[in-house]
Amino acid sequence: MTERPAPAKLELLVRRDDESFEVREVGSSLGFIQSRPQRGPEGSFEISEVRSSVARERSFILKNTATDRFLVLSEPETFLWEQMDGTTSLQEIATAYVLRYGEFDFDIIPNLIRKLQRAGLLTLEPKSRLRQTLARNRRQRVAKAVEAILTGLERVNLSSRRVQSGFQRLHRWGGFVLFTRAATVLCLALGVIGGVAAVALVQGLDDVFSGFGGHALGGVLVVKLLFFASVALHQLVHGLACVHYRRRVREFGFAFLHGFVPTFYVDVTDIFMATRRARVVTAVSGALVHLVLGAVAFLVAAYAPVGSFAQAFAAASGIIQWQALAISLYPFGFIEMDGYHVFVDLLGVPTLKHDALSYVRALLGGRARLRSGWLEALWLAYVGLSVVSIAAFLAFNVWIVVRAVS
Image 1: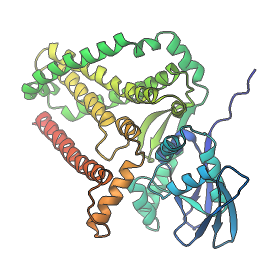
Image 2 (image 1 turned 135 degrees about the horizontal axis):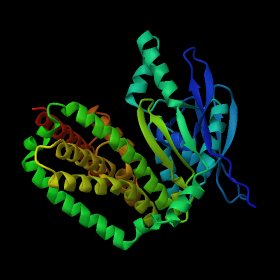
Image 3 (image 1 turned 120 degrees about the vertical axis):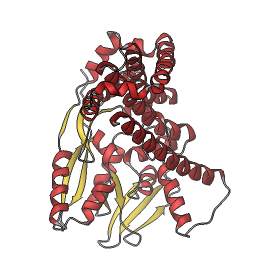
Image 4 (image 1 turned 120 degrees about the horizontal axis):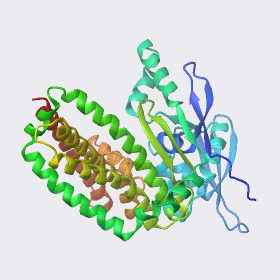
């Protein structure tokens, strides 16, 4: 009998209000979602290569200049250290590691983080803009109270790491059908039919939303609550895809992203050990849940009585599901969702968002010149398309709300 692997966790060094530190243990999935490690500022460390005519692998010495503490880093650890600039997420760092070395070691990142923290060379910065703002203003009572609430919600984590056998049973009892050619054709056909129904509904949108009978806001809120259940199904299909390619689902659970956004999540990082096709299918398959559910909702709305509550409810559900599909698969929008990860995987540029924003900020601040390389063109295209896409998305939602309420 083989020994079950120990749960993967990260121990994060978090600064308290009194400038002391505490070690907070976070599940591996939440670590990948929420954490952006920050190495010390320039001048607080020195690094040099140790040359050896005997050892085949390169090694490096990292020195904390304040404490004169030294660490020996391997070449892969040094590569990871260079990525820890406070703006690159652990998921991006892990992807960069796979693209650089062609494999993924599940222990190297948490072990390196612990080693760097003990040497006083690494801290964890809040990821979201809201958390960064609260951290800067934590001396104010309101900001301190809000940060305390978000920190408390952040620690709410209902999860299980004994889910592999459950996903295997679901896959064996029929889940494998989702990854057949027939299922793919059916999914695309349903999407086309649902799209035709959606176009017909948009032409009479005022009559459709009149079915809410003056209770549009309440109806939309109920739709969003039901949409939350589809997020769990989205993650479930991710897990089934991982099992389909004979990899292990490490964790499944519920948490508050950034401390206030409730979400389900599944840890399928073991798919890094599979082929690129497997990674793409695993990423895309979960998003297609919203394609199918949205198409079904539009078809229900198309055949429901005009102006009825059923039609309005189904149409609103279809719109929200297909918005989720677009957000999940569309790589341009400053949101690191499934489509973004597929895009950077195919291009081999795992830190696209970080590099693009840094380049544009430098251009706007006069710290860089406009260059004609393909990488610089990609950065500008990413930022430009993301800005336009966000503006279009906001305009569409304002238009929908105005039509629904009026």
